[in-house]
Length: 283
Ligand code: HEM
Image 1 (cartoon, rainbow, N blue to C red):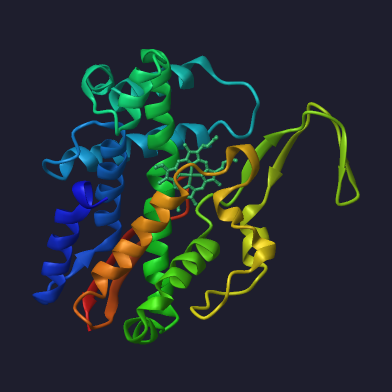
Image 2: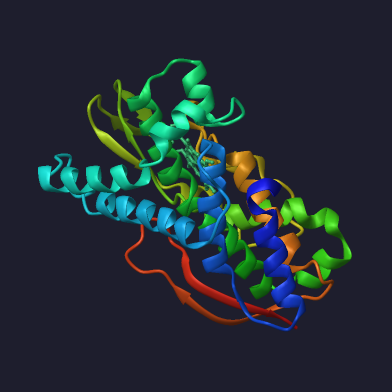
């Protein structure tokens, strides 16, 4: 985390301490791009533009997926467009598959001899699963902490940070629904589900029943951290995501003063509900 993100956080903290305004949403998109690149063993340093572009390519792919939800068939033209986005996203993968260190995902893929097509697929999955979700969860937690007026409590008692992150992710639930295919007939909550049907799990409803963001709320066992899914597809990036959110809160509060949101704008036409912009400055 520090290797790929430390310098960006230092820049952000410095700008705020000097009285400047920072767009947390823009910063989180770049940080998410850097984090995924670093995990994969692709170059994760260099100017922000490349990582903003990686994030945007993930958004383009997700937007294509969003347009296909009304049907179980896939239009070949959409598949062709998706292939071209995937080619952009994975342009650096063949080189990294050969050279990346054993501490990276692509290095591990090589050591396991998984082959380039699977490695490309994994890289694409990571960009799709790990960028929009993490950035949205981070920025919405920053906004929730501000809007509920609890920054002072967190500044006075840093042990509340873990709860702030958990509550932010619970209330934001960046993956608000999860799709599943029914494998065999079953009865759930009195309803008969038949093999072959599709179901949508409304994670947002499941996690938000506990109530609004509350910095002092203990973990609610009934939510079962469903914001990270559950079972065999449980989020592989949960620990990374929690660290990302915690690190952003720590950076924004590192000067010992609360931040103030000076403007905000919702993102439109995106798969994961998010802020397009969340500008903050220190109070
Ligand atoms: C706040 C941020 C995040 C949230 C809310 C989130 C949520 C989820 C959810 C709900 C699933 C399960 C989807 C399903 O069951 O169909 C999932 C799967 C996954 N997530 Fe995350 N995720 C986040 C961040 C990340 C990050 C940062 C990474 C990678 C670094 C990541 C990698 C993955 C992968 C690879 C899977 C697929 C696991 C599988 O299918 O076995 N996620 N995530």
